[in-house]
Length: 334
Image 1 (cartoon, rainbow, N blue to C red):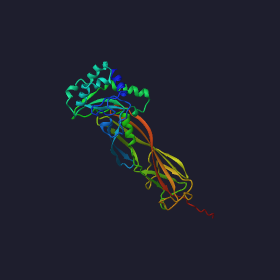
Image 2 (cartoon, rainbow, N blue to C red):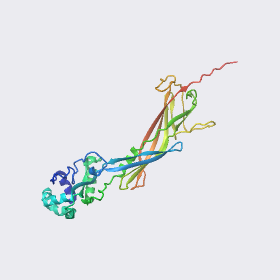
Image 3 (cartoon, helix red, strand yellow):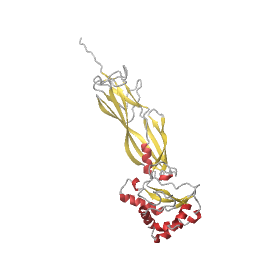
Image 4 (cartoon, rainbow, N blue to C red):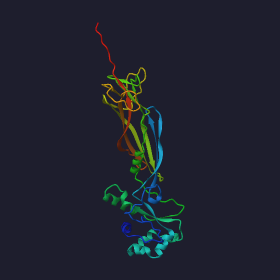
């Protein structure tokens, strides 16, 4: 309880400075923002490494580019003072001016070893801090999260050669980073019939397939402490649409046409030619724009929970310009 009271007090009472060394966000303050996330310990941010790979419809594989970015936890350990600065601050009575006297016993308990670090200018005291502006939930939820954090995180001294305490990052945050990093290849739309410059034909089944389309991918986001979240995603279907054709739904990316093939999982029928369509940039014939939209289902697991949690459906769209010809037949009566 005293921890929470002190947190509230230091959130509204400015800390006296020792030769100007106390940063504006030092201590238990929750109403200041350390600034932009940089991926370093100064602002409480943690570096997240993202890696992934996937499989394509042709049996090939691809890599999701490895990236590193900073994520800003709501609560973390912030640098307070060096051992020498704290000892001077306490000896000069500045600490007593900051708090009611009945808190002194608890405060000295937290910093009980301060005399052992009184001459140390390289190491530092780190204290828990929460940044309210980073919370995305309700005020009541934030208060509960903050109070729980302060109740179990007390000041610690970090020697110059020791690592700064790593903030905890919610695996759901890591999962979102992994999900947002799924920069998937689009593949290339192919079709058959494909005659006279690639034209298909009115009133015939036009086979459609997406060459080298991604069909599954796994992306992992991990922080240095070892906590990770992995997003696993699979292609769940393909929607086809084009002017002059009824929409079609396919269970996969289609089957590449080959001589003698008789069935496919993905096709549509054009009921009029593309003659009334404009000649688009890079084309020599009027074309219908064929759009293939791949729907992806995804879920995530983490190092803390192996139970899959569903994520929102993602859609990847690829287009191609398809000439559509109309074959005229002449019937004569004998």
